[in-house]
Image 1 (cartoon, helix red, strand yellow):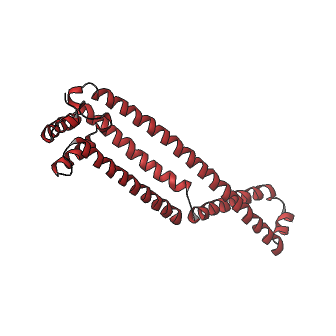
Image 2 (cartoon, one colour):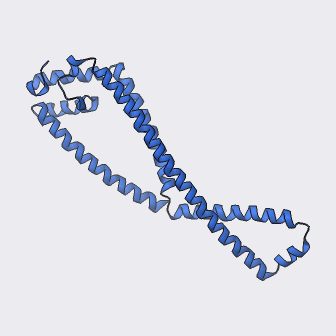
Image 3 (tube, rainbow, N blue to C red):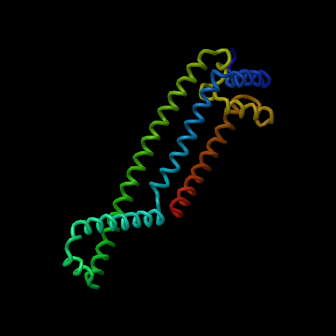
Length: 219
């Protein structure tokens, strides 16, 4: 079989269409469906965890309120149980000065508990992000391995193009370049593809930075 750069434009187009049609068969499309599901599930979980891990003023207020009122309820409940039969304690606490000190103490305790809860939640979220990221990498790697094994069974269909580009979306893009006369051969098409990939990666990095800033400002 000719290599891609040895083919004329029509031969290359025909070879690309055969490869594209083969990748659309169930043997390969089921792997694409699995990958799409894994990535969608990862994006959903990662977004929720990123919000927890990068909470801003809103998260700080939330955890302060939870810590303050939670601590107050627990503490007051304990005090009521322990000193319920102690009128002397209640009488002492009911004086204005002691009552003020009591609630100031609760306030600082609530702040401490809130900060502690926020740190715990953030640490757990970061650890979970690391875990699901490692899992998705391992799962995608396994799917890529299975895809390569299946592609290797058809050297007469996929042997004309470098292994890196044996992908349905990539092949469709190369066909588009040929049909729109943006490229006349495989080398030109691949160079154009790599330029667009680099540009898109840069745009995604900018979008991610903007999203992170938005999450920090809202939460």
